[in-house]
Amino acid sequence: MQQTQVLQQFKLLNGWENRYRYLMKVGTPDNLPFDSSYRSERYLVDGCESQVWLYINAGKYYATSDSRIVKGLLCLILTKINELPSDQVAHFELGTFLQEFNLEKHLSESRSNGLHAVISQIKKLNC
Image (tube, one colour):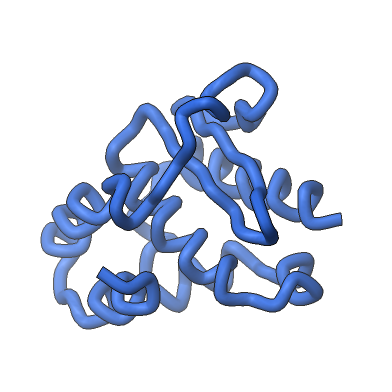
């Protein structure tokens, strides 16, 4: 599935149950590629309840998690961020993104904090 289709299809889904199932399905290696050699302490994002590993390669961000739902959320977020020109990555607002996709009310505080930690790390890597 093309990356832009991931976001478009998610927006079309009605009801949290359908969206949740989609998130669980979309966080696969086809949609969220990740080189396993980066799955080490050095690339671990601090501040996430679930383990999340993140790296940048050739201007694209890659991440994975030990949580299926977090993988799905990462797929959505990285699809959006990887479409942005590098000078706009610093201006990416997770809260606005979550609102756009009607996700903010469905995420626990710890999951939301973890995603904010991911975005903070992305912005650090973007410098």
